[in-house]
Amino acid sequence: MNTLPHVVFSRKIDLLDLSKNFTGIFQKNPILIKISTIFVQNNGLSAILPTIVIDNMHREFLIEISTTKLKTTIRLYPLTDPDKTDGVKSSLALLTKYLLVAYPDLKITKSNIFDYIDGVISS
Image 1 (cartoon, rainbow, N blue to C red):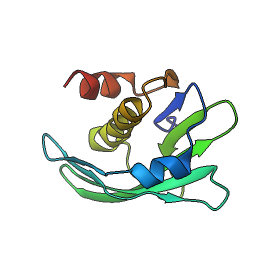
Image 2 (cartoon, rainbow, N blue to C red):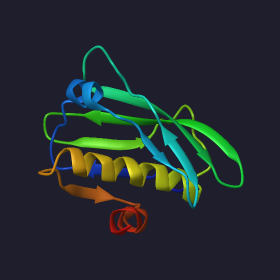
Image 3 (cartoon, rainbow, N blue to C red):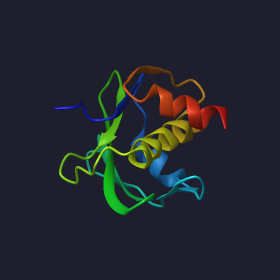
């Protein structure tokens, strides 16, 4: 089984703070990606972001952000499990870029989509 695309950050993000200030993510080219809202669990330890990707197909799925005391991880929410296309991986990379801009002290400690992250950060 190929591993799910994911990004791990160096510290906990306050997801309630993130949700209060979340402005949404929208990219039109080369692949349409739209992440317009965030839902944070009552305990504040995880959130889901409904995501739309339109490349050669229309896909709707959820991205999950989960936190512990020591780290924050973003990944595809397992129950929605879309094909791991370039567009799907790019949506995670765009969310990564958004978080790195919102939290300048954040560092990526692990990921299996560095190629996609490098692509959106340099653009």
